[in-house]
Length: 457
Image 1 (tube, rainbow, N blue to C red):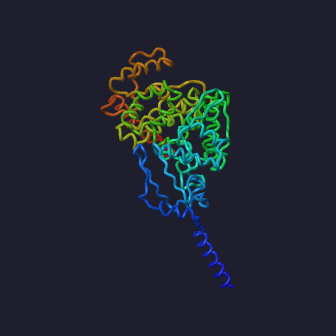
Image 2 (image 1 turned 30 degrees about the vertical axis):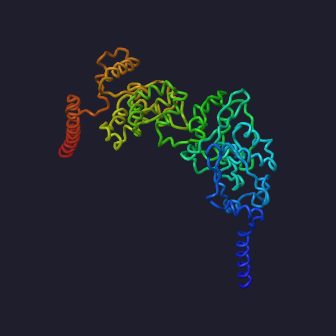
Image 3 (image 1 turned 135 degrees about the vertical axis):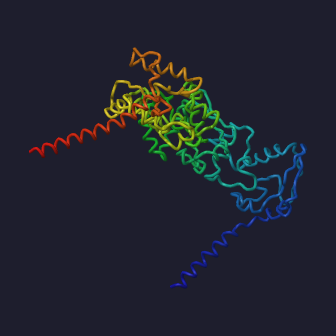
């Protein structure tokens, strides 16, 4: 029984070897290769350009035209006839040679004809090669056409470039994907023609394909204010492709500046204010990756309407993500007590209560009311006077009788020390000593009363 398996294995082995040597060039090809297999063989055009006439027999073997003879394409040539022809340039020779392809292939219909009409200077050999003609593969079939300056025209008369820079693809986080993974319905063999009314229509359609891989992110977008606007009929609301790009998709976490610039497309005034803030200027001028960008506060996919009370009540927590981070704040010498000190005062306690209550309607002062929203400035330095005036204005909304020195009573989130607010520090210290002393005395007095009562009885 084992001999049968061994014999079967040998048959498969020899069949594979024999299939690898199946290429048998025609007699004409062999004759042509006698000269054209010489790597030094070349021709020079009138323009002075030099073109190698070397033909690699391995390329011929791997070509889809391996069964053809040379004269099937080079119809003017044969074993007996080898006419001398002169061309001005290498390009004119290439154009002339490519016309021979139409003897068998008639690219007069479909997307192929459309592309040849769009790129007038394009000839067959530009995409398919000359002697190493291969079937389009999943890896190269799309870029072989889209590397040219192609365009797509919509029903409204407008058009867009559909040229793809291969370098952009290589830089993309999707560089390992194939075109068909995103462009569903297309393949190396299939390129259906589709018509769209506007450019926006194709952007919306392409964004729908993202959910096939990023369904978790897609479901989050359904809770976003952007999706609410889109579902109300505003087709200009941003979708995946608007924020992440089409082919040059970058990592929003690693490229913070690019991340913020994408938001600028729709929120230009807000970006302008942000770029001049303490956060934005550090990002733009110093490329500081520690500072927050839009998505750090507003989130990336489930973006909440910032005008809601719930969003306001979430603000201290958002700011605390960075300003309560000891490792991060120690790099800049900032106190991490800002969140704790805020949550312990009247405003913080009330906001915490409202947040748990949900749907609270009263606005309590949060971080952005005092520090600004997108135009956040440093609390010290030349801008401190501006900050103080804004702070007073905000205080007067709830405290109409607040005087100019009203904000001075505020300790700026810093815990009182002997150097900073010594009076408050001293009172706190007295209370820390006095209150335990009072409690101990009270307990001692009660115990003495109990002892006296027991003795007298």
